[in-house]
Length: 134
Image (cartoon, rainbow, N blue to C red; front, side, top):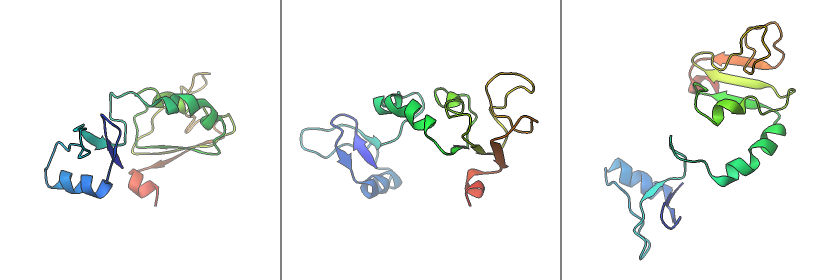
């Protein structure tokens, strides 16, 4: 989905895709009197997350039955910290090309416990995300 950043008016996804593929960019809202730029309804690197994320993140993660971590370096906040916000009983699945977010062996530090004797909930499927989810 997409919307204009000025008036938050929805913009048809197929129409947006067609304009991008035709190099008809930037896309401008067609609503009369608006003229705001249209962008996908995603958060780009460097943009702030919506208030709703901050309002619900702790409650949502504490009630999670499984945390899936996909295609990441786990270096950008706040997502790098999310792996620590689920309950101690919540399994964590890493689908990634390389292991990331690993805690130091024998330490009390945060991190995934992959390949460590005290691991009881962390699993990794090494490879591309596309392959891992099939």
